[in-house]
Image (cartoon, rainbow, N blue to C red; front, top):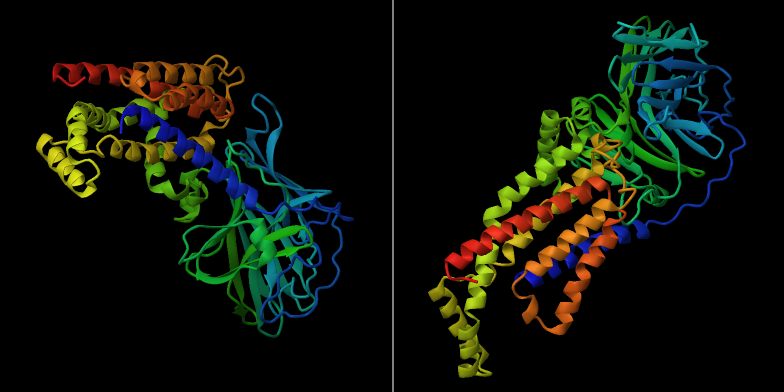
Length: 539
């Protein structure tokens, strides 16, 4: 297999990869356009899950007009006093548009679309037991983390008719996107009570965000002791309810670069569930039932994360939560590549330069394979006269022909697959790095230089794709076998740079930069390898 066929194979593999991604997106059923709700309450009557001791039909809930505003250095939140739901969350450090002032919104509760984080206590004596969401009393409706303040606590209190006090505490930490949500339960009644904490995320089902060039995912995900990371898309939720019991675990709603997640206690038995209510998808986790004796108190809690897919921060909450940065089945290659890219960026403080250095390292690491590939192809070309002679001698006797060819390969120390194997080893590295560049939130709004102000989106003037196409054309002209190819192969090869250029017009500029630099390095490597082969008498 010569280098021209290798290039064709690269193109076919890459195009097949893109088509496969688009096919997986197209297979997901399109959701109906959500109807505008008649109310904007953070929790509807059927949001509250049932427990083993709660089978009563839920009663109607009221719309709250008491909202609590919370401002920290990393989060802008709105908490509804009814139920204590987080109905709005924005990230001041992450802008909606590059250079803009508006913060990116994750959670919101608007007519036609709801994406909220809910939690509560069910069970026989839980304040959510009847399906109603309790209205908490609050000390203030505005909370702001002051300069020099490391933690901010927002308490909400509800007391039932039996004298049981439920205090729901939100604890915010400076520099963090995770919020600790604890229930301090003081049983002032005469009898023991039984409660069960639940935490869930509710989002209105909408259209997929992905495309052929940017196959991103929006939907649910969860983790159990047996399944470290599983997606649970909206269409799956519509078909069947998730119901799994596990130690630890977590649930999440994913979107490109950002995630919301509930992480319960790691050492407890938890129940992960999902359901669809109207046009809203719900994924949540219920913790174990707890009995609290009269005159005693107990604290139950979970952690809510609303923020970017920062792998270090996510791993600190759960060893598997960093897997929401979805690198696909090549994650074991992509994760080391991401770590190396982060290290290089720390040295050069420019993501574009870090990508260039990363490309040089990868191509340098692959150079022995590349040299072996070209050497093998050169030896195969040198053997062509002898192979033609064998064909004349043995004619249609395929068995004797195959035996003679193997003997010739052994005698000349030539591996007929030597030109193909290095290519097959290089392709997974490219795909893994493709996912790193696609999924890494660090590249969002990351500038390179000049007109490249955001490496996560396409080149606005298409300069990099055109340069990439030109580099492919130069590589093609350098191939020694171009003139000996049949007319059909020549036409395919002539259109390859054009086809790739068209594909790369919509690719993230960071990926195009990687491919362009890789081509330039390959051109330099080809010159070096060809000169070395000529000295060995292999043209």
